[in-house]
Image (cartoon, rainbow, N blue to C red):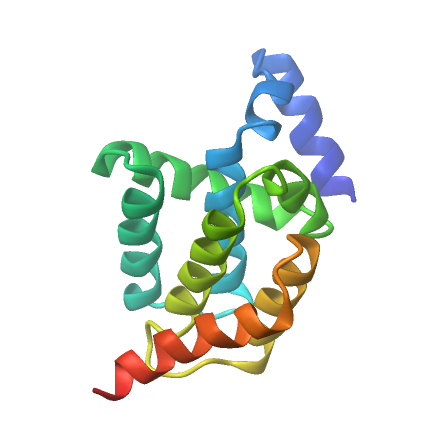
Length: 150
């Protein structure tokens, strides 16, 4: 909590527009990808590369924009208490876009060849908060894990 207050105070002193960043759906997506990558407390190069490539694909942004989002997201998730602050901004997305996001989260989790139970739990919670039904949650996982076996 102290870190969150310290960060908030620092951003206020620097004049950072907190409401603009916290209400940015692209930033929320980057935070969800960063959260799943860090869930097992072991972010390797494959997961980092997957986050970057998936952000570019999902958001149609440049390398530098994707890297900037990832850097900010990696910092933000250290101070976040829950996934709720990110998922609430994304409920207006179409069902297909929410499915693509959950699938991207599976791809980040599976980038190192295995899915840690903590990564699974983060994706499961995000799917619930985004109103992605369980069948679609499983379908996204199977699309990613079956692709890895081929």
